[in-house]
Figure 1 (tube, rainbow, N blue to C red):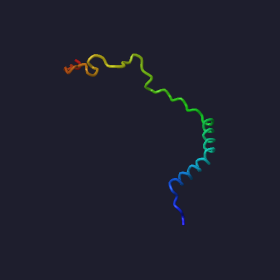
Figure 2: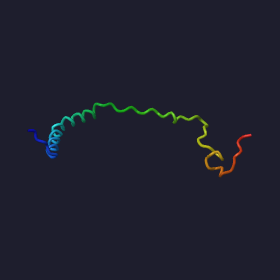
Figure 3: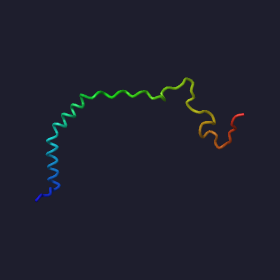
Figure 4: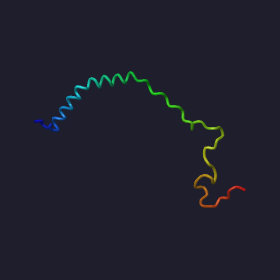
Length: 76
């Protein structure tokens, strides 16, 4: 007859397995700290480059909220 393990017995069994694996895990962790190459620097974003003389924001009544509800005549 097979005996069912209680939750406490399962926990004790898992702790024993964890204790047995601890040196291997620590060795692998320490090796990974020294053997991996550093990550490359990210490339500069394309939006960082701007043309000279470019308008960075709207002016006058074109910007949001400056018409105060009045009709604005568009061009000619």
